Picture 1: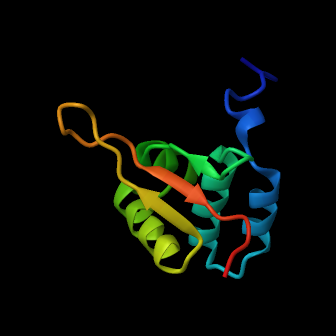
Picture 2: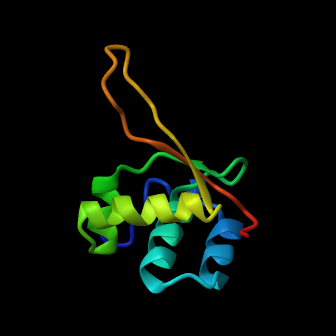
Amino acid sequence: MRGAIPRNFFEMSLKRIAAAIESDLPSSEKLVLILLANNARDEDGTCFPSQKYLARKSGFARSTVNGIIKKLEKAGFIKITHQYRDDGGLRANSYTVFPDYP
């Protein structure tokens, strides 16, 4: 639907998006960080996008997105929390995007 407001529009954190844009990251890492920030709740920075979603939005392969996410966590930009279903299977990770970057 043209002109429709995205489902997560009101959940994004403008503070985190602005900080991601101003970061001195390589462009691929910056794009994934912006996508995460765009999905982050303003109150606590948490978000739950799948790697498939991030790959589709960024244009990167899922394996590339996975590598970028690991780099962002190692550098202190995000925290990854693995989530599991009741049957022990893996669900989409939860990410916390920090408002102030290293």
